[in-house]
Image 1: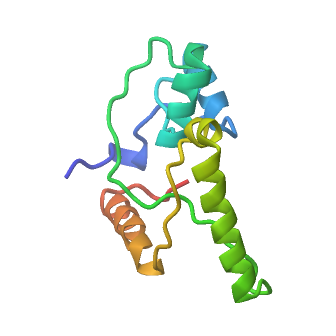
Image 2: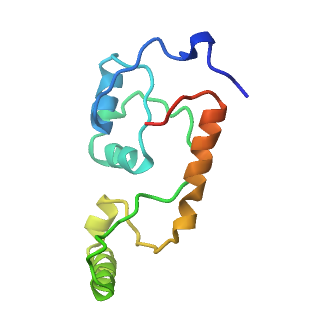
Length: 134
């Protein structure tokens, strides 16, 4: 297990760009040396904004985890949830260009337990002396 250098600093500085595209632009402008981008955003950039990926090198990936959940209010009745599920599935099934652009090939209903490995990732980071995850 590799520990952070004394004082807990791995990088000389950290900048906040407030967005994946801005983080990639910071790399292109030499304001940053490394960044983390989710795979869907990066696939979008490769397809639609390749100049932001030009010359960049992917150095690592994290372990797989479920994508962001779609969450409805507790006030939405069960039949409303089912209608939303059907509408999303129909949109993906019937608008192939949009689905492809959004990198969607369907939706899955996952139990909350499927997200447990995200906590495992956080626990591992803490064990490796990373003080918090963004």
